[in-house]
Image (cartoon, rainbow, N blue to C red; front, top):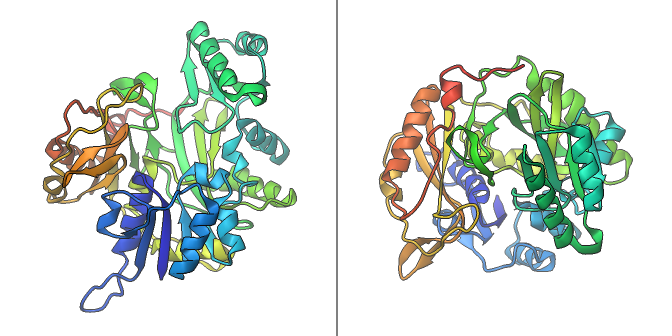
Length: 433
């Protein structure tokens, strides 16, 4: 197949990495696909041809896909999906993996997602949609601490504040409302106790196929200290999760949501990311996203043994019901994010990045690029989260050891990472209420 992947982060590198690993199975073990990326990054460039096209320009992406004659377009990030890039590609007659702009509102508007969940009978946190700071203050007082305040629109994974400081919650809400102007809305929710779980569901508008569950780490520091980030690491499998959790999520959450979207005339085709909290009152939805989540997908795809290309194409064509059951490795996988100095508040760019080859020379380790660029023939940091170091092993202890051995080989001045990714799970300390 000829495949175009849209985006430039570690999520897109993980997708390209998985697609590039698919071979024809012959004696030469040749790659099975011709891969392209727009705009891509230096890591993706090792496995795909890069094209300088704005990922959020639907017309330009559709024109590129048509000119290349690709068999499939995979739209990675949320912003192009909300902007309607998948719609433009579909209109050009090219199969595309990713929801329409209307369906992408499940991530583009927290208030819309709450409305859909209510109609579909999906269990989630109680919430108030607020348009003024007075309404926010009343909602904070109604729910009490810890306070959960979410920007209604896209915020690159940083639009959520969870704090016991009422003033900090109000300040976040005020800033979000001001930034959006007359259309500003925030969602104030009740706090959900219990561990969080990420589950990606592949959808074709009718059928839902779940991947394996993972857990990510949002806070910047060890022991969940510091502000929320886009994610500092993740791991899979979750041996502590209740038996039957994935089936429960499909039956009670993902399938009803897909059915409701179809009923509305906006069928959902692509990835439905279901962020969950396993609370003392049962499983609850924290949020929906409409794309693979970073950093979880880096770990999840490392365990997938079914060719990813076939899964994505079946979803794009509406043929998931014909797909055989997915096959998974029994290995554990841990992904540790290496972030630049100052992340998340003010990440420093332009620092040299070295040691990737040494990291990838280690058994069970590969490195995915998130925020890198070429400069004077070398690699430099170009974002907050710079690299994902993915380690595989027979169990979590071995996977953690592999990932952190890889991290130790990476050199980026001023960089930081969490040292406790998957540590509590390795020790058997994660408890479900």
